[in-house]
Image (cartoon, rainbow, N blue to C red; front, side):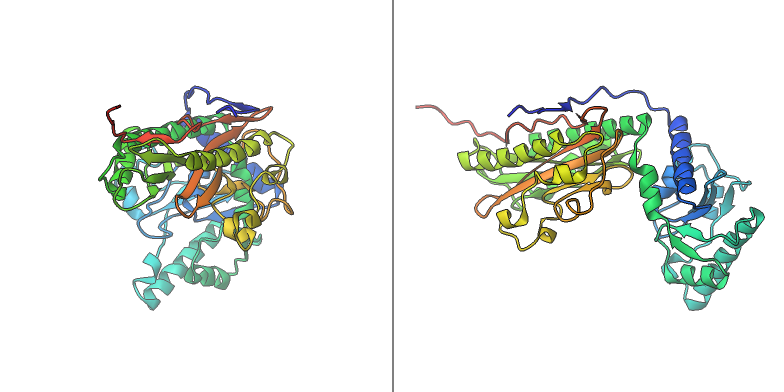
Length: 407
């Protein structure tokens, strides 16, 4: 089976990214999704949703430091911590903030750490200011969408202010589902950064190296390549020895917020065995059967039928295969629309559309070897998919080879 099978196209060159255009197009997509679903206004707390509609993020060292009111018919209003008004904020990329028509000081209560009374007062002030802004726009009688990331003091304060909430997270997933050209170039860049991480780890793996040290090497390489690196992990012994089989996972490192998820398999100091190669090839072949079934108009049910059923893997139910036989949408979070698996997709299929991005992962397991897992990142094109990842997948990667004299 060829490495780049069927309808899959090799990763295109990374084109220029116009960040101003990307912000404008993402905001327009969010507005269109809100309007389509009859949502006049939505209160957003999730960092990925805020970033999508505004191009900025509030501080993230405490939950809910900032939030955004997004609208179907006008520009969003950002509520940012007051400290951000006095220093340039890189997330906005516009220099120091000033309070204006579309920027406000946020109210927060540090996860209730100030105590019940202080928390209650802060939450009431938060709710009154949200209501005041909605009243100015004539929207205070409308139900307010929110994305589910609000704690009980905030929910109670909004209810006491007479604001009715409903879940708008599916609408935000819908808005973010189709990537713009600039977003696709962000994902191409992110995939290149993930490839750099895998390459660095392939050079670092050797007898005697600790698992955490390998992860640090990968993360450092991704940071140097321009990534927001958050994680690389190994299903391996704590200290590598000659003969070890290692499945390495890069899950979560990002570029401009856009996520990656890539698995590759390594052996230490020797050639792979026939059994290891067989398990590797089984994983790879399933991934490419899934990939070859992805095209506009097809569904996640068409793709999921190529994944291994739980019973064939000796597992009690499809719930047990989560994160082992899976396709998941990629974007500003690690799991977006669409999802491909036998648990949900066969009965609740989602339709593939051009511009969707996702990661496809499949796994074999052997008690003597461990997890043998692979994963590719793709984006849907007019006729199939483009592969975003370029790190070789055809065979198991030999790391730290030990040369032995021939007789």
